[in-house]
Image (tube, rainbow, N blue to C red; front, side):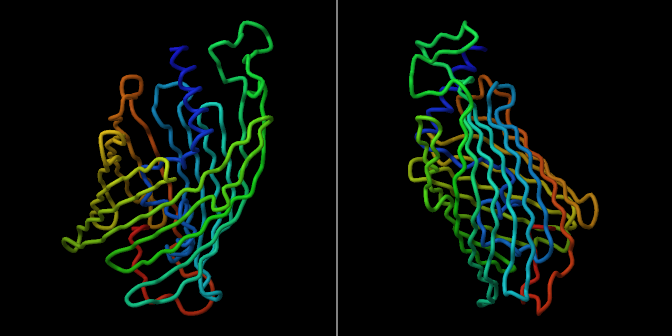
Amino acid sequence: MKQLFTALILFCFCFAVQAQQAPQYSLYMFNKLNYNPAYAGLDHSLSATGIYRKQWQGLEGSPTTQSFNVHMPLYIIGGGIGINLENDVLGAERLSTASLAYSWQRNLGNGILSAGLSGGIVQRMLDGSKLRTPDGNYLEDVPDHADNILPIGTETAIVPSFSAGAYYQTERFEVGIAARNLAEQSAKLGLLNLKLNRHYFFNFGLNFDISRSLSIHPSLLLKSDFIQTQAEISTIVRYNDNIFAGASFRGYNTNSMDAVVIMAGFKLSEKITLAYAYDLTLSDLSVVSNGSHEIMLNYNLNKRIGAGQPPRIIYNPRSL
């Protein structure tokens, strides 16, 4: 297991140097502000979402992610505002993000068109004590990587980060596109210079009423940095706007096939929703991992915020 842990640390570090990927969320359909600032206010009330994810459970050094965001519409300014916080630990590296989002919204056709911007900071930290090299000496009190570039202690850097997006929401469908880390800022960690790669997100969702008590909500999420691309197709079924369950498939070919996701949730009260997702690993990591776990808690005030007239569309597929 120690050799496996060392291999994972080196893999995660090399992967981070080449292309730092955005954190993975199986419950992405409940957490749209995380990847698209244009979604700020489109829950049509004060909405707060917290997510905890433990990926590849049972494998030492596997990714752990915490996310929290809160947003609400402010019709007096013609849009919405939000705050997004995220902490992602991947092997020897940690990325902590804090950003503010603003969206400008207008009625268009049968729906709402929203354009959004966000800006904030990213703290990038590298723990050199967790790195291992083939020629290194780790028997002494002070590790020696036999590589002058790699740090032996902890290196930290803070850089700005900017994102932009657009979103269109109607009663029956929604579609969004966004770009994260627009400036592709580089973080200097000792002698290392690691770039925050730009990421692109595209999501699409449909809402069908099967009966008065039953509805179905298929969705798609694509994310890419033009080095790697991942796709996720999901379907959720809701009963009485209270209980829901669904499944996802992550991957689009044999090289990107990652997991089958089973998810379920229910309303603890009129304002609080709890959801859980379990990823059944399909990749080669399945031999050393017993899957991934993700839990989400959402609070929606279900009350109009701010002065002015509310938007024409009040249907809210996310907070049901």
